[in-house]
Length: 106
Ligand code: SF4
Figure 1 (cartoon, helix red, strand yellow):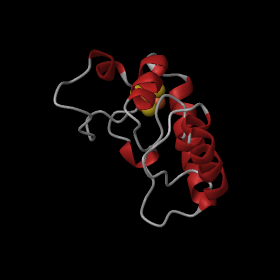
Figure 2 (cartoon, rainbow, N blue to C red):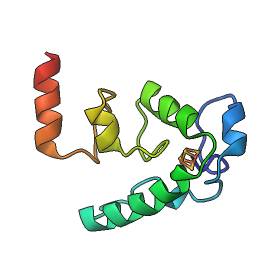
Figure 3 (tube, protein in one colour):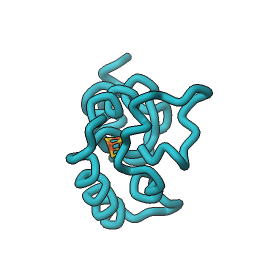
């Protein structure tokens, strides 16, 4: 995940050194007021990078475990949410899906 531009934590993770997306943060995080069509195009490009990245599994697990925003390991916020790894305040998840998941969890 664009490791040179994102401060993931206080320690650098080894797998991030092998990320193919270094320096391309703009593909992995939504701009302010990004429209759904633009998000879909951006995430498609991000997904192409992830599909050839040697650390996709580590990256996806990191995104899931830490409930992160953005596109991690070939997975969008919505896909992560559907897999059971919800964000505190999801912005890339359709309102109805977030509501259903919250109701199911309570
Ligand atoms: S899997 Fe995708 S987001 Fe993760 S490090 Fe690789 S290219 Fe970046």
